[in-house]
Image (cartoon, rainbow, N blue to C red; front, side, top):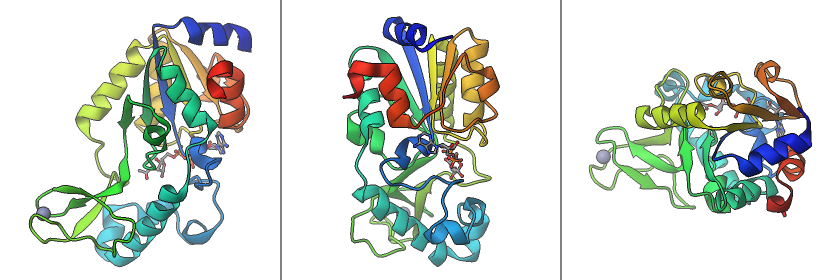
Length: 241
Ligand code: OAD
Ligand code: ZN
C-alpha cells in the first residue's frame, strides 16, 4: 500500500484507533525506555525500577526515579505529532490509546485518550487508593490527604494488571476501527503489543510509524519508517502544521 492510499483511508475512515508508545514523545525530549542511555536509564532497566518488588525493596529509589521523570514530563512540551492527532480528532472519531504516562496527548488537546499504564502526574494511596495530583515541588513520598498513609506512583508496573475497564475499551476501539495507527512503540510489552494485530485481524488497515522494525511490522499494510513528527506529517499533512 502506498502513502496516498493510506492518507485517503485515514481521511475517509469512520473510526480511527491510535496506539502510541514512548517514541511519540522522544522528540519532546522524553527518553524512550529501550533507546535511552542517560541518567537512571543507563543504570537501571525499567524492570528493575518499575515493579512492585523494586518498590518493596527500595521505595525511596523508585520514588526518586519517578520524581525525576515527573519533572521531565512537566517541563516537556507536546510536539507536532501529538498536536496532529489532536487536530485529526476534531474531524474524525478517533481514540488515542497510549502506553505513555506523560499526559502530552491531553496537553496537545486530545480528548479521547485511554491511558493503559496510568500517569505520572498523580499518586495513589497505598492504603485507601485515593488519587491525588502531584505538585511540582512535592517531596517524595507523597502523603495521602485522606488517611495520611504513604502514596505510590499511579502507574502500572511490570507484573501488575492493567486497569480492566480501560483495557476493554482499548480492545473494543481496535476491534471496531477502520484504520489503526501504531506510533513509536517497540510492540514488545503486552497487552498493548497485540492491539494493532487485533485491528488487522478485524479487517482494519494497519499503519506503523516507527524508524525501527518491530514484531508488529510484518502485519502492517504500510510502514512509515521515520520519526513520529515526520511520519505523521507525511500521513496527516494538513493536520500536522
Ligand atoms: P520503547 O522504549 O520500548 O520503544 C520505543 C519505540 O519508539 C522504539 O520502537 C523506537 O524505535 C521508537 N522510536 C524512537 N524514537 C522515535 C521517534 N522519534 N518517533 C517514532 N518512534 C520512535 O517504548 P514503549 O514501546 O512505549 O511500560 O514501551 C512499552 C512499555 O514498556 C512502556 O509503557 C513501559 C515500558 O517498560 C511500563 O512501564 C509498564
Ligand atoms: Zn489514603
